Image 1 (cartoon, rainbow, N blue to C red):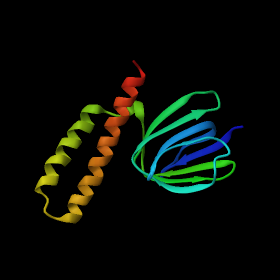
Image 2: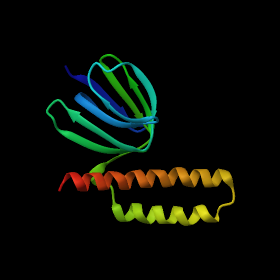
Image 3: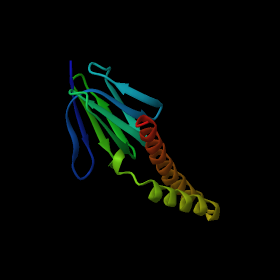
Length: 138
């Protein structure tokens, strides 16, 4: 049995179709969701969103965070931002990561440090996805 998945961000529908499974990083750990999954409403943390469609085609995306809702016949993901994993630029991510690491040491403002740490965690999540993609292609 297949299940409808809809992934949206503020600008557009990123994915809409029937799927066999979805993998995503929930706030309490990784989730692998199949049709007939128990109903759930949870936040998503930065990381991999992997979609396996009904033709067994896998699409890997970076998701910066959002909300996941699972209903009996439909899964909905409202994402902050999404980037196709193949479009992630390692050099750009490394530059951003290094800049953020330098700035965190110079900020004495706790609010500013918290924002920098949040941005840094997103860059690290992107790097992990790139590494995962490289390992799976070997």
